[in-house]
Length: 165
Image (cartoon, rainbow, N blue to C red):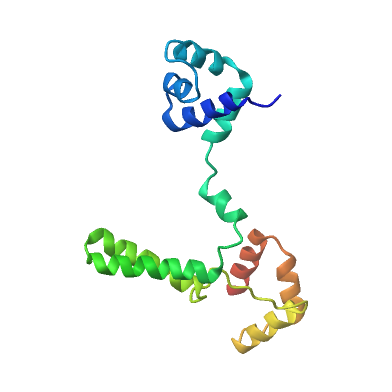
């Protein structure tokens, strides 16, 4: 069952004021009966659910995820706007911190900072390790590298210490 027009008006007014008696009067109930009408309406499950739906505000993250208008250019423009506003206000303590943060965000959005570095050595990693060690003049045979890689870390330390003696 859906809400009546008076109930819808009550919900709208109640969400706006938070006062049941005022909302009942605005919805068209008489002043003499407004308090009782508000009490009855607030006991009605459908009215309460409508009020709850109207009072719940979506989080900013949810709005941003659903929005198609937020593009990288929009974000960059917003960051630049905040930088300009901070510069207009002067450079007090909190402004400097805010300015630094917005500059960091701008640099990240332009790809100036890299959070992750991906390195792909491919399937021939053992050969690359051997070449690297040979360049470092640690002339180890390929069989020794493979054997060392297969040992647990504690055993590798023991082997390295024994080789040094």
